[in-house]
Length: 337
Image (cartoon, rainbow, N blue to C red; front, side, top):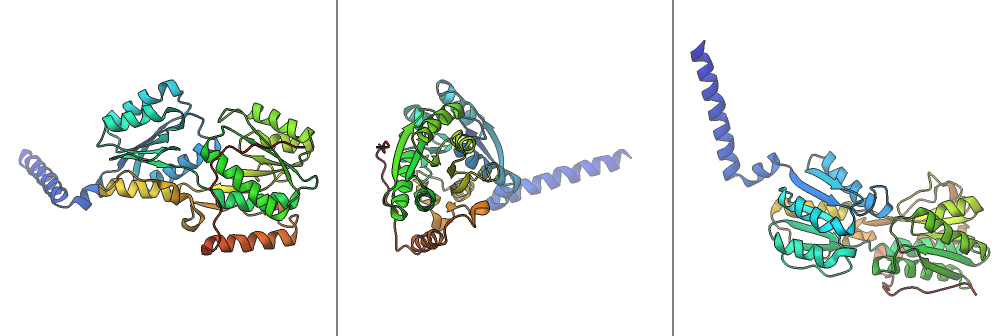
């Protein structure tokens, strides 16, 4: 009996040794056996629209068995650097997050951990060797959603409520405004920023003020705006995510951001040992399915046929590369006359 046990032990040890040797001389096998550890750090809740798209893409990679994923939400700016360092020392190969309010600190952490890959939402440039940046360059569907808004307003007044006047917000607002002007040259805008990424009550109050001044279509860059539009019987255009299921009689359409092309590329490069500094902005474009205009859904029969035809033609031109939506990162300023 003892001899059988010893033989089994020898077999197990031999098998393990052979597996280790095979993995040593077959890098692809070693990669397949070990999941890549990925961590994400968010300053707002998972349900916040911008963060939810990143979280969704990472959860999908986790579900496919490609990564081991951990994330922290509601991380205060004062704690962000500490959490980055904790994840970097915990063996994570890729750290995803948002560097907008803590650019200097985030870049310092990346410099201190050159063997860890960092993919951070940022208005700045990538930094060698391991600090890549991304942003939601979804100005194309934002333009298309603006075209719809211009065709739906009856008062020719559109209200726009944003978080902060930073490039990634500004460019979407400008694209939206340009689209609305294409289908309705008479349209006016009122723009305000609530100086928060997640404060639905404050966004709601800002929207109420614009509706009281005649706005009948609201650009909901922040949560809370669609609630105000719903309560007042007005319309809204969504941003980043599609919330029409929650507001079937309010949200006409949305400019959607798909983070899968960005996240999937980063994970692939990390696994291959080829990750380096890069601007991932291009992977948010419509041509690579990084963004899209949502279906009209409950508003399919309510949007005028000529507006739908114009939107379709413009979308085809964008996809064909014969029309380019201008990127304007300056702060939009507008108020109703």
